[in-house]
Amino acid sequence: MSRQRYDQRGLTLIEMVVAMAILAVLAAAVIPMAEVTVQRTKELELRRALRTIRTALDDYKADYDKAVSEKKITASVNETGYPEELQVLIEGTDWGGLYSYKRKYLRRIPPDPFDIYDEGWGLRAYADDADSTIWGGGDVYDVYSQSDKLGLDGTPYNSW
Image 1 (cartoon, rainbow, N blue to C red):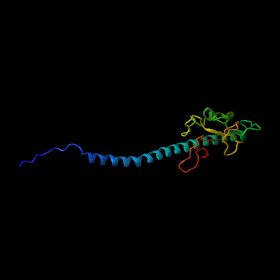
Image 2: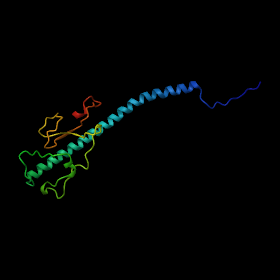
Image 3: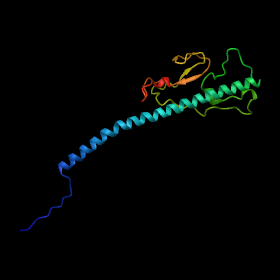
Image 4: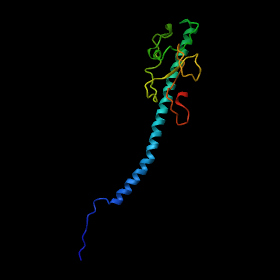
């Protein structure tokens, strides 16, 4: 008797179904983890952007106070020392000769990573309440995200 030898170069249907099932289980586990990773990355960007803008606002106020104390500028009665708008942080000021150059505090305003409607940052004035969502105008004392989404820790982004 002679034996015939067959080349087995393909996959059987059962092998193919098992491989697809394994891939489906792996994909089902990876996709939620990837979504959380994307959200966590955006949260880090939000924290960094808020810290950058708030530090620039504090530096602006410190320079204002220094210029007033050194009598380089005269403070008005209702003036808080905070910028009128965020654009002032980019344009800079010389503080009446406190610096020999126009001191700039930011190169650009960092974007809000959760701003899907292109609304920009929410602004608070010095006279506004700490949790106010309406800008009183006059100066920019604080910024916040206008997103109504919740963070991974359960707090709303607009309260950060």
